[in-house]
Image (cartoon, rainbow, N blue to C red):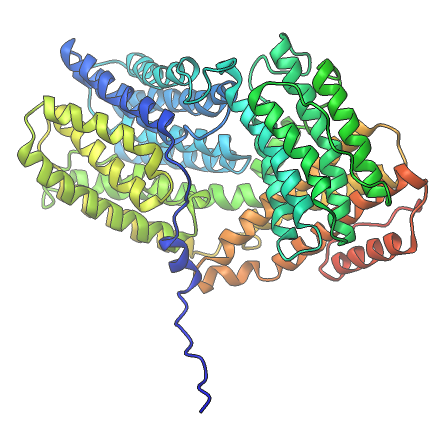
Length: 617
């Protein structure tokens, strides 16, 4: 007798996201930096008799540790430094505002600051981190009483973050001592690009080809960021930098040819992927390439791949070509302003302002309520709301669930440890341990919340205040309820503005790339830059769409259908890449190229995204 298969219950998207954690090897370098950051800074403050200064420095190191992700040393200066500067400014302004303003004006000022910081956060990941630290530090400055002046507290904050940045720049990573360890992050990022090209060539015509093409985009994005730090500019200043730029530049035509092969859907041979793999090994080992196997030259995309391999071998040997435009155009001031004040920035800014200002008002009301008792840490509520309202940490329901669970777990763990550990030595050691755990805990929001909760409660107790686990849990749950309510409030304009703003940016980039290719310009460096911008903005849009789709149904419905637009844009950019390679080889397009272009453009018009087909087609 045939039995129908038993269907297993499927968790809703918001719950599935909350249960999902990132995987990967333990970042031992970041763990070491975390252990050497907050704990030693706090110890220095206690031994010098400046415990409040040590606490602030430890908080700054903790916040910088949350942003200390894998990447190059040079890029970390911007990724960690700009948020630290924003935090110092927030602490400076918050301290003086808290000392000179009554509750109502202070709440109004914090609300206005939330509106500005929320809009700025829509510009990009670094801006988002900067906006978060600005608001968190402003709340701490306004609500944490201290004998130090505002500028002294700001200097302590900068010193704490600066110490972690110094550790990031100075300490080598495991396995990097064989070469020039200053560029180990850059070398790994560029090598990963060549490995991703090889993986895509292996997968052409198979079920995993689309995923491998997306992985290639992610690898190129990471390498682009790794080469974006100070002194790694268009005109490199050392032989090692020139070599890295030449190696990254050589990967761009290879990625283009591999994408064109992916578009054809015709399986290749293992020989085609062997060349990029040898180039990846040469980048990692900082060695020569040796002889590279040439692929067949039976099709335009294969001929482009062979030509790109030959150019790569020459570039690896001579380390030239560094004066071309190697990195895709960055988001300029105009684009940043447009993102901050566009639909996405306005919607997010309003929600941040309501959450930050509303939580500050509730906290101060509780602080002054006689029936509530002495409310020592009113800044906890707005600081918690700032983290909860960040969409880049996951869907709203998932963030709230993880934050609540992590806080309860962390508070319970700290309650047990505080009863056993000696003071202050045991608590300082606990801060050091938590600092080391932060880089690992960033893989899941609940785990990160639990570690940070233990760390913050330990800092509070070292600062001379009583055990505060119960109030920490209560205020976190209150912040969760507030952010849930504000997250579902209707806002002026269209819901899902952030997703649609990113889709619009991806559409503009795809259009610019299409115009350049069909205009048959001979500037290949410009073409590769436009291609990078098109794929990068599309990847950002897909990330935003995936997060929006995992929201509760009341919010997810506002972005329904956006994944269809992203699919059409992806087909358009892939087809444009295939057109570029074919035009280089033959000077004209086939009927299939034109048909696929018209199909993708027609799908976009049906979705209300007008991308006109140039007359050159």
